[in-house]
Length: 400
Image (tube, rainbow, N blue to C red; front, side):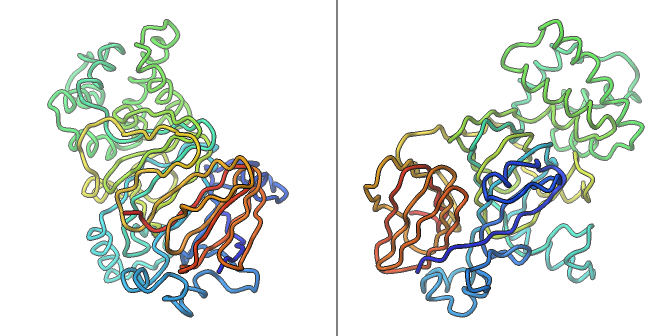
């Protein structure tokens, strides 16, 4: 069965005003539109043509919608598919393991924190591994840079041995990094009061601005330092700006992606991308946001290991992105003519067209999706094919 979907748009403050309107086909409201949600999450389930939600469809007959095996293992559509349109930086954040999410969800329930409370961290009992793939040039911070490289950045900024006593925030910040204790550096930094954070950020931004103007930063670090300066200019008292200096700066070209597992500290800074994740809305925030932050929980959840993010480069034709989890997979189809492609993943899936059009066929069920069109494919023993001219994305159960 193939069902067209009407999908929810989340109007978060960091979104832009036009991207999703142009993609989906509605008049811009002048307010930021941040995320297009395609799936069956309780906070924004997609809607079928007959008015039922995708959540309703799955609940009425899980085995038919999901397939017996997926229904038995997960009991729900286990992934959430999104388009992100980023006009301003997202929060510095991380996501829990499955066990951590279950424990956190139970703990906040026992504490009586309402599910919709602004200070709620765990809104469900699921983990949230995710895969982001760029539709436009996409900028982000992803995981900790190797300490040796961060020390090189500090040296180029003239901050390897900053003047002042131990009570100076910049001295303490650099000292913790010199000791190699990322966890202590992040916990201390994010816990600063506004006055101390402002002082620390100013100590970073002044030399950053001078070194950028004089082109004294190595080319491999220029974009990272420029991003920190931009964040600091906009948020001069947010300690998350200093933590941003510790993270890998990443540019993704269209079609390139990164998988983020539990504990990866990250922040998206700009661009448009498709994202698929486990069916969860659990976000543990630490900075760069007016929303609730929980520093102890963020430090408990974060993996403090430095490494370069494994960027998945674009390939032409059909590209299956690496995703080492059972909940989801993501495939991009570059459709160049009307010849049908037959290698769609088995099980329930969601199709999104971002360019041109795609004809999706399952047995006698056919749907022709234009740009911005979305459809749900129930599990079926009948082969599903896709054809057309354009670009289609299929989020599905994890491929073996």
